[in-house]
Image 1 (tube, one colour):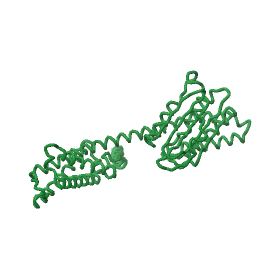
Image 2 (image 1 turned 90 degrees about the horizontal axis):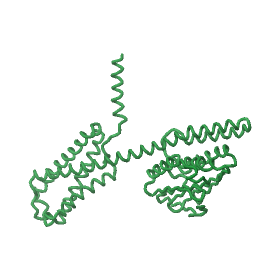
Image 3 (image 1 turned 60 degrees about the horizontal axis):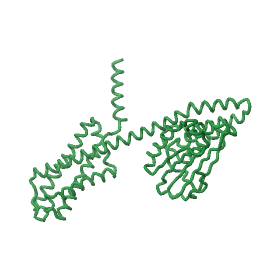
Image 4 (image 1 turned 180 degrees about the vertical axis):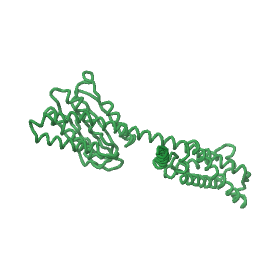
Length: 374
């Protein structure tokens, strides 16, 4: 029974590897990758035509013929590698990569032999240029194709691994933020609710419902993205619970200017951690408390989110929000690219955090900088 169980386990693992493992060979079926392969092929033709020892023998007809041959060959190699991607990915990366390069060289060799035979049989391209021997033409074509394919596959492979690593880091940072909200905020909220039960059961019930809605929104199953509307709702529920806990010491002032892109896709847990920092490292450390001001504006192709709260001087009370802000900045940069900007700083008794997100031509017609407090 143990032997059969071990065999069944090995078979299950083998089947799982085939089903779960994603192909490691770069996907050349995507249009940007195909365009890059065609561009590399045309670049080779341009480089060869610009060589000093061969410039005198090149005419417009020869250049167009060479370009058509190179582009057709690049298209054939890309299509074949696209179709055989999953098959080659079953091999080890080194062996599979060598097989992919050899496959490209074989396709180039066959294509070169066919083209050489056709053009030589009809007397060349018609401009008096003498074709090289079959052996030289086939060897040169297959060698160049193998070299370009190897460089392209290596570049695409490194790019894919880098993007996968960035995505994994962003996912890990989001999970870390979710893990942080569980013990810290949950314990404080439960203690607050326990204190409310003998005094105001109705208020305690409201707090329980808000806490349930908050955790349902923040920790729901799945790894999908959030929206601006969901992030604002999550922040409102969090602040409602903190206001019950801190009473009049915590006040919140929302300002929403202009029509806002509420369906804008963005990473989860962007606003709530920043507001938690404002409460823990700002309002809670001041005996008199203070007001957290949240401003959301949409102007032209830019969304501006500003959080402003009173805070002790960093020299007197160190701030601990650096990790959360760096994590949010990394995830926003991954989602929105170089057009994203996030900045924060303390001045004159207030800490201000600003986030600028590009709307990519969404055409939001906000009211500009109306109501800016900074």
